[in-house]
Length: 496
Image (cartoon, rainbow, N blue to C red; front, top):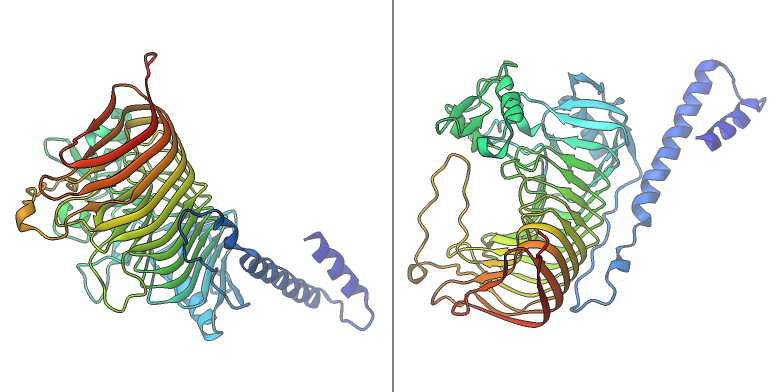
């Protein structure tokens, strides 16, 4: 900005220019906008992700950053007011529509608290948050109801079948998830429980479960029961069937459900993103790649209520840019609380291959490396290479393979486990190579169990690793899980 001031001063001293106050301010505004645009576009174009693709154990297709046109609109220019009170849903829509007419560009969210309903991104749009910008999603659930289908709720930020989408900057995106999520009594202190009750809500299951229902703030419910309203929870950022995606630098927190969730997307970059929510947030997954091809997750920090860095794959979706999870690199990330640091599953129907996870650290997760699925939810997973992982204070297993995983939604009955002989989509974890893992503190170092007559876990090798465990070194069902351990040091923690 000092350089801008010097340039502005020089321009205004030239005798051929009008120097009245109004003209000076217009000129300064033009110069500042130009400088901001230069910073934004230079930052995006300067990213070279090829540097991460060195010394790979298997060749991966490489990501490329999306190209965003050199146009900018600030949210205030679109009528936005960042006072934390004014609803800015229309301002976001106007700003994006204006940029769309220009062929795309950067919608800049300046410092302030920007209360809003759902935001829909379009082709060639970058949503850029200044450092002191907070996008705060309204507690009024009615704003998120899909008008064409009242049974569905929009994600807070969404895009569908779009190309060149980015969310960048240093600001915060807050999903206001406490207005949506149920809370289990055994996961909170008495002080926290009383705080939830102060919101309003109702208790179920003899006081074991709380729902944000009939809240005291007066916002109406959008379903006929607390349980049915809970089923409508949506993700904070969900991008579906998109190509050329960049999410960079922002903090994403307090989602009603999953936080960052690209689905059936191709060429995805998630770089330097912070994800945070309470450790007990129901279904509070941090970063999930669902059926994504050619993707990279680097330099991210996670502290979440469910899975940390998670790969999922559902049924094949014809004509989508991607199916299954392929050509994915996950590197230089930190996961604090999560159900698992790196996770595959529970859905792997579309299959997974060529996934590299290296140079990551997990501190305080429930499990470290977690492979979970079940009959009816499984698929073929191979060519997965995991290396140079450091872990501390892992609550349960450092490494676990589980083929009888059952989802347990709050307040809902768990379905009966399917029978292998009558089900399709059997899990098949094979060709998974894990090396150079150091873990200090876990109840069980390695646990693995497949499914009888299904051959779910085989051709897994773990090498050159050390595990300091508290209770159990290995719990491997040799009848259903075939693991090879080479130069694996298992040390009991007698000081714990």
